[in-house]
Picture: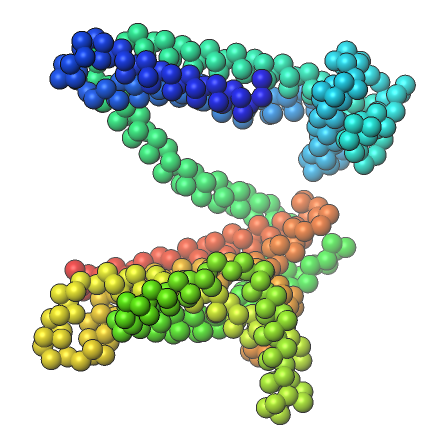
Length: 490
């Protein structure tokens, strides 16, 4: 049974349990809702949860465990000569899964019987041609050990699917029956349902924490592997970035961080004043009609894909800056040699960040109590003095948070940097030269046929971990500033 249909079946069983549980409670109370401990819907929800939770729990656990168990058994059929490390073994296993899926397609379309798919041998049959006839394209001829592993993989997967179906339905039906039989007017169903809902809320909150922890552990473990192969001193204090898969790499991080912070600084220098002034105007000076039109138009910028901003930087802003600051340009200077430069990426990224600063600052300024405005105006302050001396200081903690969000967005941006700033890793104060950032190099180091046991590939994780630590430090510092000013206005 397909997993989707199994999911629908368990869900339908739970909904039936909801209706029957509700009816059973009302019947036990002779239709008098006042005799029930809880509202009727709680009794139905109790049966619903008792059906869905065991069924879906078994399904999730099985779907996580089955691939690992099957791979451990199938891997034993692959000879050691067929792979050299974990990466090449994964490539072989992808071929095994592809052939197994092809055999399933051939059986489903009637090109083979189950017995033929189980007993076929590559020594006597062109497996690649037979699977190609049913639309399954394979990159190369099927080796005997790949076919044997695929047949075992297919057998174990199909058997595991049917066993999972039986266990999931058994758990769901058992939960349904036990909960339904315990349903009566005295049952404290509301308490049970609220405990389940609380557990679901805690689980949802835990997902974010566990995901963050998993990301950090993944970065940390690969970073440790990198520093086993490359000196940490050369990484953190090196002034040259020159990865070479042929050996002799220089992996100094300073040029990358210089480009990252340089571009981010220019972007914030553009976005923060414009976004903050726009927020002050929309919240304090603009009329309802102007605000109703201007605010949505401003927020349209946030919905534009970053690749579009990158193309805008490459095709429009870059050539425009060259016409102004390049050789023979309108200003008569020769500062800019090409369209890709720090200034190009910084300006376009700043435009992209304007709605982040503006929208958040606007909401924060509007949240300042009206009594503070009225009090300032009542004491004789002008509108501008009220904004400068009362509203902005009161909203400062939130505005700092908005700027921090924009800074994090700038530091993590990739496409605008790749298309607008170039790929050169250098230490230079000239904003009209091409540079690159940490995120752009993380992508480039993990693109292509990289050997993940080499420092040139593992350095991407070290870059990510270092960027994570620096961003965390900035967040802690910003939180300190926010709390300091917040205490002043509490």
